[in-house]
Structure formats: C-alpha cells, structure tokens
Length: 135
Image (tube, rainbow, N blue to C red; front, side):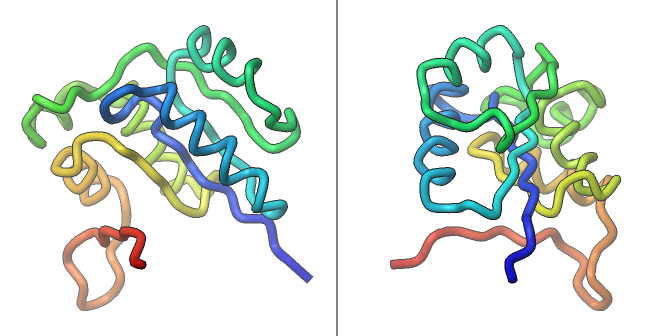
C-alpha cells in the first residue's frame, strides 16, 4: 500500500523558471503515481506552461503569488522580502502540514534562512538539510 506524498514546489526559483520547474514536474509525475504537487508561483505563467504538458489536474494544486526571491538576493534580504514569495509560501506549507517536503531550484541561502525561520529542527540538529541527487 502506498501513501501519497505532497511536495511543495517553489516554481519561481532559479534560472529559466518556471519553465524548467514545470518540465521537471511533468517528468517526475510520469513515474510517480503517489505524489501530489502544491505549486507556488505566478498563476498565469504556470497555467500556460502546464496546459502544454500532460499532467493530470488531480496531481497538482496551483497557489498564486507574483512575488519571488531573486538569485542575487542575500539570504537576509530574501527573508525580509516577505511572506508572499513563492519560496516562503512553499516552506510555510510544510510548516502547516499541507505539504510533506519542499523543493526549490532557487536561492539556496534564502531557502536555508526561510526554512530555519519557519520549520522546527530535528532534536540535536540546528541546520536545515540540503539534499541532492547522487549517481
């Protein structure tokens, strides 16, 4: 028996976003039947990109914000940008248990600071975790 996992996606983070992020969701969703995506970003852009893909509407939820963190932002200035950025909202969805995990191709320093401000750390671990693909 499989349990559905909900992933919060900062669709506006990183170079060539949100296009590359939607491409990634499209690829991942083809091989992952037990994953649901909470996608945070500019609704108009996201709907346009998703309409060109074959992603089932019951596999995702779009949450609109037109605010985003830029790659040039310092971690502190990114955190000060506010609670309406795609990254902040995605992290907050993990905090509120609407999502199980977050992914972002955006500003890593900002992601660490925003996660540290919003998420409870595991006992005896005082830093957020960073994961990457290994061969």
